[in-house]
Length: 617
Image 1 (tube, rainbow, N blue to C red):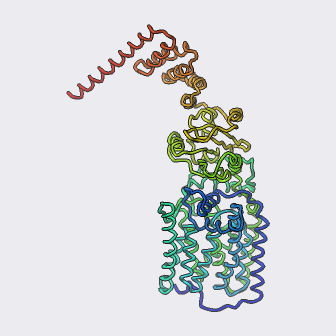
Image 2: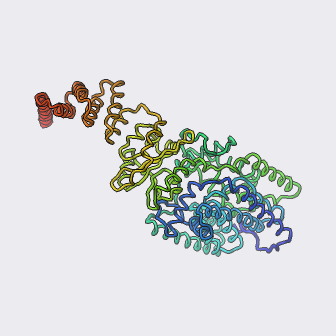
Image 3: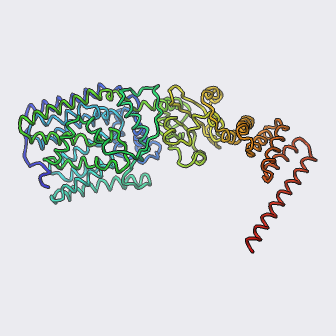
């Protein structure tokens, strides 16, 4: 176990080492500045992190249960940069650049060759995955910085500092708890180290856990995203990367349904090879058992990913790559020439091959898939206030509108919309490809014209139909005290005309009836009766629609009679016909049908009484 840590030797800095370190750090900064412009909008998770950062600095509270570490960093950056998205990107940019010298410092504790110390920092500086995630508004890069600093501290025999840094890593990404515990196990035989290390880490973890629990009234040691949340995102991004396409507006975004839990360990290993430079990750895995054992803690989660239903998006292997690069350099450092330099040349060739084959990912803005929601949010901005509540499946529209975001409630179609009304929602936003994966029951609101128009709890106010199969709609919630009608509602019907009319006519008719659109509802039930002449409910509803509209009462009378003919025991049908006859002032016929209704009731009561008597006997 003691061999897991490097010997206590001082390695003085040479001029060459300083020059190389400065050069590769500058290279990392230049590459990131060059590709900065391609990440045009905030990431999905980034918008949530920013909302949390705003709440931590006195803004509206958010329902998100993400950890506070990254939002706190964004809040600090916001002191110097007022644009929240830019502040978040600055945090990741600085973390991505800082990772380079940190990997050098970690490597020099184990590696004698100056040139081999350059391996991991160079990979972190230029390979696509580390570059892109230094520009996305996500927590991976700050997390990696804290983890790397933790390994530097423990390798320097500074257990308290290592524990504190590990605790901060946990506060940034809760899965860091696994790394903390595995590292503690690796240090078991070094009692003076592991006790102080674990006590320091536990102190920070407990403080974070208690603070977040009190602040949110939600006690969770770790937050795990359900696999379904990654399905569309990961599948579509993988398609774009493999095809060399760019995630620009106008692309088709509908993808087949994928079971997010069917993730193979092989998929993650494949990403390790492709994104990690091919040979380097292999040498790194060997190096873990030949002098770099302490770094096993940094890679332990890789084995556990499939068991948590995680996807195989390349971002999931990012937290392990830097430690495999360091372990690869440690392994090469223990080889003799010329094998060492031959393998180093092949390793650098693998880096070049990754850069060549994955070059499109430098420019891939995978969040551009959500541009329709960004534009919807920008359209909403003049219509809302910071207190406005927007329900959606993704936080983009609310973020760009400057409003409060709430996730659409779970449950059935009816239950979800009832809950939105009950909880005081102001607007509902739905994006077609997102609904197709996560809430198919709500999909008709954006793909079926009668549902869009006649849903009684929602009024369509805006449609973004610029992108193929990526339609986004905004609905105003119809509730007492809800938002006032918008001027766009007077013209929206014409724009909605492009949405198809699906054959689900009975459901359409019910929605139209509930929203008071009786003539369109009658038309929908007419479609039902054309295909199903024996549907008594549809005949009765047609009659009721005409009664409520006070139109075509003669036709309504014939529809009600047809319903009674098909189901002579249904009391509601008699009541519909009696109401029609009363409106027609045909009192004699109405009285006759009232008597027939009483006969039905008497017959039912008698039948029920006979059944009860038989049961008693």
